[in-house]
Length: 150
Image (cartoon, rainbow, N blue to C red; front, side, top):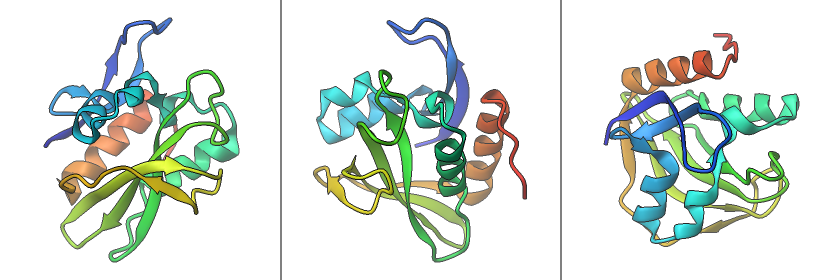
C-alpha cells in the first residue's frame, strides 16, 4: 500500500483536515476494513486533532522514530470528542528497518503512555519504503503546521 498525506473532508467533520492515507483512502477506513472493526471509522487523525502540545509532540516523535531497529507504539487515530491520549487511541506498532518502516499490528492503547495495548486481530504488516514514508510524514507535518526538527 502507498502511504500519502493529504487534506480530506470527511463526513460529519466541520472542516477538512490533514490525514494520512493508504492508497488514497482514509487511514481510519482502511484500518477498519483490515481489522474488521467498524468503530475505527469514527476516529480522527491524532496528528491533526490532538490539542495538548506535549501529547502532540509525543505523537510526532513516535511517528518519526527512525533509528534502525527501533520499535514504537505510534498513536494514529483518536476520539474526536476528547482530542487527547486519555480516551480511545488506536496505535500502530511501528518498526524502523534499514530501507522501510513497518506497521506490524494495530491496537487500542489502554493507558496514555501506550505501554498497555489491546491488540486487534492480526493482519498482514503494512510496509513503506523508508524514503517515501519520511517524505509523506514531512508533507503531513507541513499540512498540520507542525515543525519537524531533524
